Length: 300
Image (tube, rainbow, N blue to C red; front, side, top):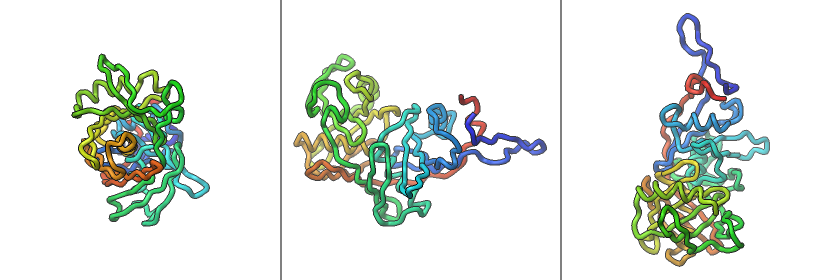
């Protein structure tokens, strides 16, 4: 049983004496996360606990958990949990949501501030009365050793493999987490759902990979559909948008200021000559609440 869960019942009323775990819920163009402070969790965020909380039938339901860690240095530290219980190094939509949460809690103002992720520090800025957040996501790399992709050291651009009987061209990038981008003439949710999980777990990707199917619309616009590592088909992803835009720019198909259109909505990706990425997009507050102990019973 999770350490802080308090499921004691009042003998007369049958009511629970206190809630268990407070959460804050947001979405970033359809990619929904809940934020939990580690002080409210009262113990480690285990894979089993993360899976239960993210489950859309048995838990609160979300595309992931943003765990706000206490940091004696005064920095804002973040851990990101996927619905399958695994952790992600970085999430662009997650970072925008986390920044909005900090702003809503009056922990930050309008000035840029730093968030510490497992993939390093990023700078965030909240604008438009909290509705829009810009994140300096870091610098893209196409280097196989840093993504990582198996094989000799190289930039992974316009390579080919056969997946599910389909010969596909792909390019890879990392913005702190791994991505595989496939150019398509048109996008298909059915294809994304069918091939995404096969590509995610392809042996050449030792840490698995996020997958983006990308259609170039013009020099300033691309459309993508996303199979997210540890989450599955996803309406939007900031790191996926960053990686896909970076690949489009690196291949000479797009300029450095790109609007990325996803099923959940669009965000802006700006890429400088060093392939440093700034992502700007909306965040929406949904609700705050408490997770009841009863929903977490039976966890190891």
